[in-house]
Length: 484
Image 1: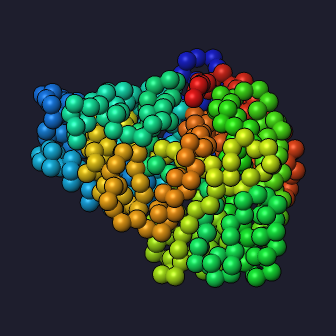
Image 2: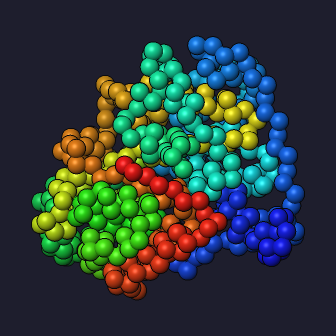
């Protein structure tokens, strides 16, 4: 493949991959970006996209004008949420609305690997749960016109109350969390909380309480270590982002949410602020109690160790309990504790947690049935669709009131209590993970380097700032901006 800039048809491998949102990640120590062109040889001619289905009549119950007999293809990331929510809830609801429609269901843990050849070939599905380690670069997909803008979805009448728009039926901040270039392209569906997860039965048995400050954290770490339990651990091989979430949450507790907005906006020097250095140093101290072998472990391996009573505190989101249910002993009771306070002067209290809409669902702009993709999302955002999702996945959605009356698991009950304790003290979401995938990849590498003892907190902040600066200076990457 040519790397010269002589003609419009000459593009670099990286530009080719970025153009289709596919700078794929090899997670793990020493991993890098795939640089080989997926098709090999010379630059292929842009394929003609498949012809979309003819539309149907627009009505109160069919606001997008979906063709009644148009096939629909759904691709689901089959990770911690499973895929039974799609096969047993959402797809049957879609089939009920459009009995003539044939639905093709694809489940995978390798979203980019599965869909990269299809985007290159112009044969894309109609709705994608774009998640997991091997997710596609949403910012790059949007930049190249591959994502359908979702304003029409959010402004459509709600299935439950047609007098209200879909946007009026979801938690505050949901629509905003899916903005790219100021417009909604992602439907973030799962209302998740992030913090440190533990076995409340184990803690009660040992007379332990979760630490509220990092000084208490170090004392607890010595106690847990003496009991033969790793105080804190995460999986360096494929889940370094679980750890950098903790660094960002702590930085926000120190300084306030503006620092996370500034991270998203690539503000000069944001990674070298005192709050970021203090947070990185605090977590590096705790990580000293973690064996170096965890850098080569995957998240399921570390989570299993916690279920076996070998790991005390594990950083993750509220999908964890459901993801581990097959491996969790009956005596194990998941509970969530916020990240400890770093300093006495933190702007946000210990009780503050990160809670946000996550798990992005997208509709490809060049699919055969994009209107069907929109309707599928509208069905997901109905109370019936959302309640069924919670029953099947064990996770609460952004649809307000959809889980009312459901019997909650220990983890979700703990989550509910933590949200109540936090009140308005909510650490904001991050968007850079969807906007700047190459930067996020480098952040994973440097997080492992910091927490497995190869670099200092100051070096971590310097290296990550350099990666942010590189992203900001790269004119081929469309820059995004958020204000809240």
